[in-house]
Image (tube, rainbow, N blue to C red; front, top):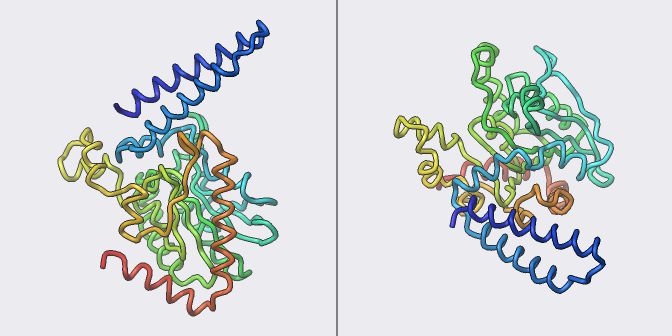
Length: 313
């Protein structure tokens, strides 16, 4: 059974549970036993639905508009967030957000790619696809973090860098390459988390980190399945077959030692319980930053260098 079929059954079950709850409240009838049995069935249904997702189903889940964005996690995980704007060259890019905040009592710099929740927001955020000024803004904030010795947290969630003519004219490739170059040598701890769709060089530009984590149902690759299918088979409609070949799931990337860990999502996906997912992210960040901060800078940089040199060996 496909995820879509499971989701139809889940929606029907949730509807029935709500109807019984309303009936029980209005009529004053105790139906707690019946509700408990139905909620158990709903839980089992969700377990079956989300325990064996195909790569293509994970791609679609990672792209869901309801999925929490970088700003959602920033508001839940950090305090005193102050957003900064502009790259000091061209302008500001709403598809890339960043600023300073506190993780517990620790000052940090946080950067993320930001999607919208509806058509209006997505147009404003360019569907989470940054322009060159977005990457230059991110790099500006990273250099600032290095100056003040603040750890850097990156949230990756983009279909890819914007590939329009204006972006190319302003040096999209150069901006991404410069981000990769400088992140490799920044003298502060860097942690990147793929929270949704980590696509193409637009995602890789924030991925040169000491530790890289992925949410359970996120994806991470150098190309979208549609792009892969267009190149390989000249047919973007074969994206589902492409996703199966691309090894873009969190499990695949952990096997390849490209990422350092998988963060388990609430049953049904991160959008089902933002608070629970945020607590998982907060716990891993506090633990990993504590480990990274006590390492000598020279050792940290050498381990970062070796981490990426060893990929593929």
